[in-house]
Image (cartoon, rainbow, N blue to C red; front, top):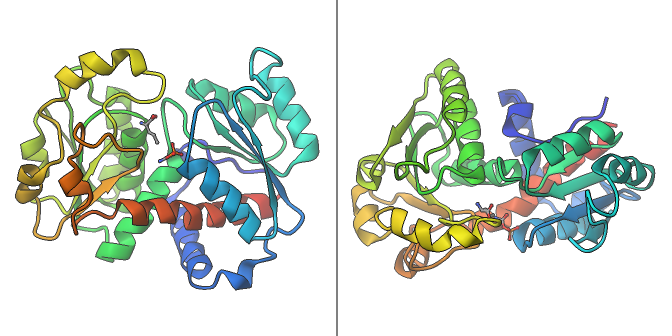
Length: 306
Ligand code: CP
Ligand code: NVA
C-alpha cells in the first residue's frame, strides 16, 4: 500500500521518530546513501513560488541517485489544462512520487486519492508538514528533548502554525500560540491538537498577546503575516499584527538562550526584526538546511516502501 504525507496527522509518534533516526544517518553519512533512490523520479508540481522546498527536494533526490522534474504553475496548469485526477493518474505512470505545492488543501487530498504513487504535501493553505518535521528535528538537535519544553508561535494561525501544532502535540512539546483576534488557528485545529497533546501530557494554549506566550518559552517561532495567496490583505494584516513581532524585547521574555525560528522567507521588520533573525539565538538557516535532510528520509520511507 502506498503511503502519502498530506498532514502530520498521517504519522504516528513511532513513524516520526523513525524519520528522525534515518535523518541522523543521512546527515552524518551522505555518501552511504548516494544510491538509495537510484532510478527513482520525483515530480515537483508547484502552483506557488518556492526556494527551500523546491531546492531541498531536488538536491535531496540528486544526492540519493534519483531524479526530479520541476513542473511550475505554467506547466501542467492544474485544474485548467487538465483535472487533478487526470494529472495524478498520468504522473503515476511516469514517476515514483509527487510533491504538490498548492492553494486549497483539498487539491492535495484529491491528488493523493487519484495517484497510485506517494503524494507529499509541499505546502497547502492548510498545512506544511515537511516544514514542521524539519522544525521539530532542529529543536531536537538543539535542545535534545521535547518533554517539558515550550514553543511560542507568535503570528498568523496559518498552514505553518497548524502543522507545528499537530507535530508539537505528537512529540509532547508544549505549544503556545499568540495571534490577534480573528487570526487564531481554526478552533477545530486547536481542538484536534489539544486531544493529541492530552495523550502526550503536553499542553496547547492560545493567547491574544505575544508577551504572555513568549514568557519563559524555549523556542520563539514566527511566519509571515500574509501568506502566499493573501497578498491583497497585506496592508490590513500589517495593522492587525503590529504588536506580534519577534524583536529584542520579546526575546528578553523568553528563556535565556531561547531558539528563534522562522520557516522563511522572512519579512524583516514585520514579523521579525533583522537584529533577532541575525542574532546568536536564531537557528533559521539550520531549519532551512534540515528541510533537505528530513525530506531525504521522508523520500526514502515513502518511495521505497511501494
Ligand atoms: N519554508 C519554505 O517552505 O520555503 P519556500 O516557500 O521557499 O519553499
Ligand atoms: N505561511 C507561508 C509559508 C511559506 C513557507 C505561506 O504559505 O506563504
